[in-house]
Image (cartoon, rainbow, N blue to C red; front, side):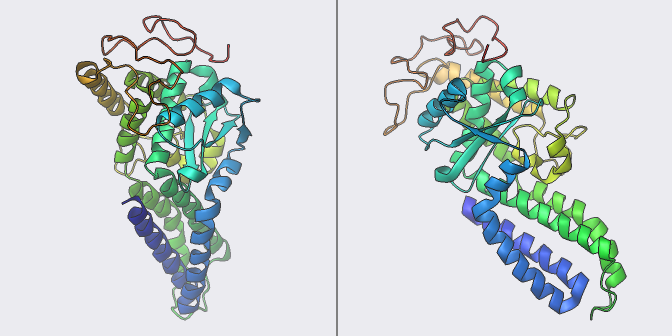
Length: 340
């Protein structure tokens, strides 16, 4: 289903490219745009993840440069039965994160330094489990390709506006084509937002909560990130709004989160869904809302992702299980600054 959705998306983007080419240069322009779109589709499939990471100045880390963070991703990936993704940090004060890559074998997760510094370790685990859920569902393929193609369409629109259209083209719509370009850039962003269904965030929230075993860790993180996103600017995202849908929370300031073409559901709705999931896990989970038992064939059979051999004792749904970071009970407030 994900491959079919991606194919439809690419076809729509290609048609938009051809329409722009026709307005600029008639049939010849349409053919040139078709060739350009075909090349961009192939390039995006293989390289869009590297382009997005480079756009945000992400630096790859490993077990030596970021041991605790890297180990956390490693444990969560094993829990999700996923290959170990590449791990990146972004020097940005806004707490946020995203995943990218064309498939689980070629995936990467990236978190900002703001996320690492502002959230507790439990909350960071919830966020990164959400990003691994996107990888598990192949959402990253759609997200990275749409970000790249939307940026290319906007660039083509700017090119048309700069040159004022070709008044000598054989369709006679040079001036009209120029005016149309002024609409195409926001239209491209709208297409991206419509193509990436907001329901994928709910699914990733639920799967991420199941991966880490604690829905309320992610719920707490979402509340903090949403609040910070309106106060701490993310300038690379402001300059590249077509990539906003990749983040766990919309990084753009002043966004109405539940508008018709919003890329993300309202944060309060996501938190409510996670609270309901926590209640369900507390009522029906065999381990009472702690780490769920590994699936058959899992790489961490018999142990939770933090290395414990037994599941924690049954606890109330709203009270987090014993924290994996420092041996503290879940009833104590989470510690900020996970590297401290």
